[in-house]
Length: 292
Image (cartoon, rainbow, N blue to C red; front, side, top):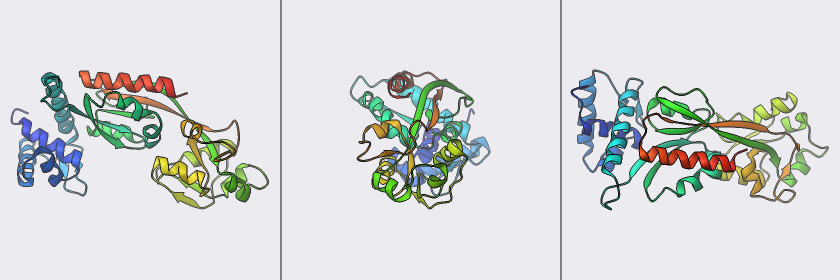
């Protein structure tokens, strides 16, 4: 560790954040060859490969502790230097947030802090965002895991309630005899991406059914809700998104009183910095107001 220097760690963090050596060079205002040399020197000093030269570049398991160290040092340096003099750049806080939370309640919380810090938001499924904490890619994350990642603390945020919905036209075509697990299992389903199992979990919990209908993949939270409104398929949507539309006009509650609940947690580094403390307080307060 005595052979490490700040530019090497800074280069490592930039390469992982930007996903390429060229992107890291632009971020740090140096040449790509300078970034490559710094990362190679760091790898030589620690005796192992720290990043995979893939597209995008990815941190190796051995590199995670050095990436976290780089992030921690950057946070401490930024907080010590401060931003009140009007010349220093605000600290950048990398966080992982699932698309539904980002689209409904997280962004308003971040907006209150945007004049004092920069956000590097990684959209990641809530079931997988803890992995980004383990890798050191982010400093905090909205996750479904209440088991703290090593070096992190956990705060329960609340419940994101998902409601089974479709458009009125979709209901008339695919559920003409009324809603049932069997009928829904044979109707076209909307899925966010290949890791999204909320619709399948709902079917299993409601009536033990297994989907055998067509699937449409729409990997955007706002477009996903719009696809439901347009009648492309049925899905479970966050209550907050449903509240933005008109039931009976835009949406039909497929089975009133049913749904699926996802408990969310906020995990953050135990390293306390003013920026991370302020961010966490804003997120927890917003969750207390918006989640069930």
